[in-house]
Amino acid sequence: MTDSAPAPTTFRLAYVPGVTPAKWVRVWIERLPDVRLDLVQVAPGESCGALRSGDVDAALLRLPVDGEDLSAIPLYEETTVVVVPKDHLFAAAEELSPADLAEELVLHPLDDTLDWTAPPGRPAFQRPETTGDAIELVAAGVGVLVVPQSLARLHHRKDLTYRTITGVPQSRVALSWPKAEEAPDLVEEFIGIVRGRTVNSTRGRRAEAEKGRKTAPKPAKKPAQGTKTGGAKAGGAKKTAGGRPAKPARGKAGGAAGRSGKPRRGR
Image (tube, helix red, strand yellow):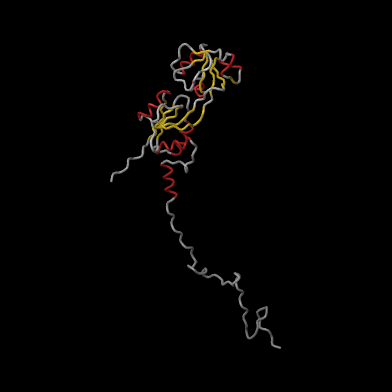
């Protein structure tokens, strides 16, 4: 018989720009202090490749994933915003719509995370390579940019601002890992964390350990001192059928005893 492979001591998690895994990392450290969690930031177009190559165990990315060999569970949707210069007319608005962008030059970077069929506004002659490049063009007054709010915050500049836009696609952040009949233990642990499962409901190796501790047999209790098995307590008073203690019988000394305990005088 051969010994089973030792449990991994490192969990490698990739994440794309704008996604912040900090709150989940804190829970991981509390629950699995013996397993190191390595964070690996990857470009949006590299996240699926990192999973397929085995460079990471799981990834926080934006849907869709390319291919059917990867599993994914959606986590949340991001608010979509329009990034504009601070002196732009849109800066005075609380909320925008696609119709508001009809006359604007809308930049569409190659690493765009929104699943556009037809972006609003006038298209630029050339698409910027990255969102960062598009932000620079917005700052130069070339056009406006529609992105998830997390990316607008990531590329924050003092001379730029952003406003929410409705009626447009929203990016969805998901947790993804290589597809298998059963997810690896550490991936299950992280799935439980991002889904808000408690320690007892998590289906990873920690949950199995907790379950093993709970089902361990308890030691038998010793009988209390001063008792007899199957009988009344030692030294206990006798009881009547009604459950009340029996009264002591009155004794006689040459006749019935009086209340004071002295013998009565004969008449």
